[in-house]
Image 1 (cartoon, rainbow, N blue to C red):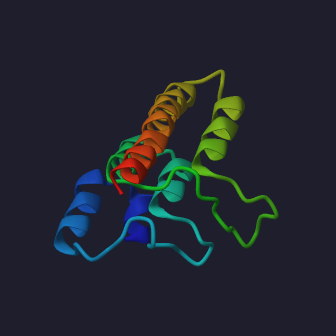
Image 2 (cartoon, one colour; image 1 turned 90 degrees about the vertical axis):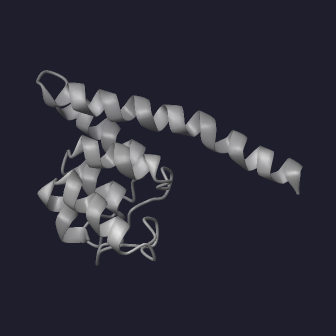
Length: 119
């Protein structure tokens, strides 16, 4: 699954998730403790990043890259890309996923509150 993330092929990624329903998008990590969402953002595969978020990927979990002393959340990685690429076309893709993450942040706490109220 992690190799598919680097290729950027959304249809193959979806196919793997459909064929292996026991794969949890949040428990699947590489040797650097990066989830599929982290890898999609780091490789600028915005369509896969959006799909991961739609499938319930945790947006506030930090990656644990061995080579980096800084542990970043997906949102922090996107912000770094926005700052780095603000003068070229990569900026547009980064801004799009930033909006998706911010929208998800407003929905996620409400779902937790609704769940708590029900129980």
